Image 1: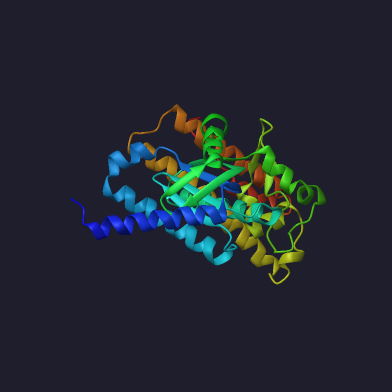
Image 2: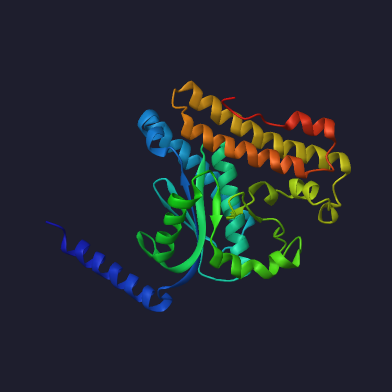
Length: 289
């Protein structure tokens, strides 16, 4: 039988949660989710090592986000789903969450995980272990039914919030977050997070605009761009090598990898200021051909 003091403490904790809900309410939030693809198979094969690897990837990304991104952005983790959200529904917080999701996507790929997700706005309440969220349901449906590939879909309701910034063509918002081309239309017409364009040196070459990066010598700009693109390329190649080695490579994984290859090469082609001879070295061939 549970100790009476423990029961009393639990009851008091629930009263605190109810008081918190009464104060904050069930209200509209900005929510993004990232789901790690192939997580079930990875856990079954790697056991404890898989948990450690995932924790390290999420830790590194969240620590970077907490250092660089507004404290209005919060994080919750449910097994292979990472939730990034803000209860402040405005354009600045949309871009905060976009940058946080982009960092997660890059960091997970660096640890050899593919992911996909969605960014939505809807009602939400999160308090430690308690999650009651229409936003989470909506994001999961988009991630499962629409995203398909390793990409993060931006819901139309979120686009409405940031459309003035998109239409203005401003490179950065007043908080100095990259906004131009942070969201693009994919081949199927869906709005997606443009992860590589959230890296400042990649952005500068794509948009032929270095005015925010004038402290960098041209040679340094080239080195930084090449380093960022090469790392993304290497991470894709490393993921392919790892699934080939462990025998889990199949047509489903190939299609997801080749989606990333296509995206990467498309960004590379847009970087017209980068010398052709150096650009050709960075191209990535489709897998399975």
